[in-house]
Image (cartoon, rainbow, N blue to C red; front, side, top):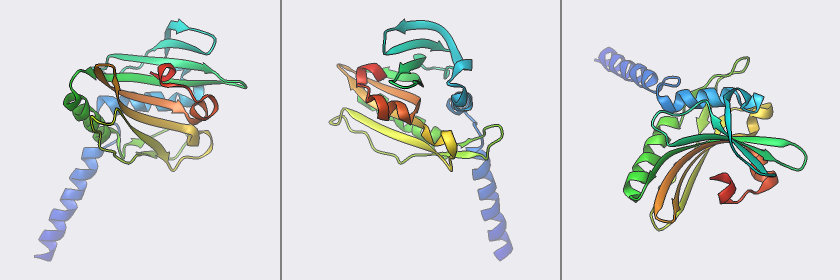
Length: 191
């Protein structure tokens, strides 16, 4: 009897391990490419220029999540160096319930995902879920790479649900934490 229970538990653990897998969905595959190019300031993901001003220049992203509405790279001009971010609008809806559902779905796809970088040990994306409510117009989950060392400690993956006038948007962003700390960009610059 003990051996049967042990066999069943072992089988369930094996199935659970394969179900999370390394980038088993489109969101994770896109994130893998974006995170791998982070040390290059996303240079290999840069498409045609979309907009530009003295503080920021936006480019189309070559890497897009299938089904997303818009993916862009932004070059931020800080006082002492240029910083970069990748942003993908995953959903825009008038219905909060649809946006909340997409937000939760994306969180479940991203959390505990294993990220492999050439020459580095694998990282795990880790972030604590926060339940969105329509009374609170802004909910953010910040994922960190664990255990990250060196420059990879600055990398953040952010999942946001935010209300814009009459619409709700779900946005996935990959950025250098220095950008957020040095510039304190307002929401119009970030989204």
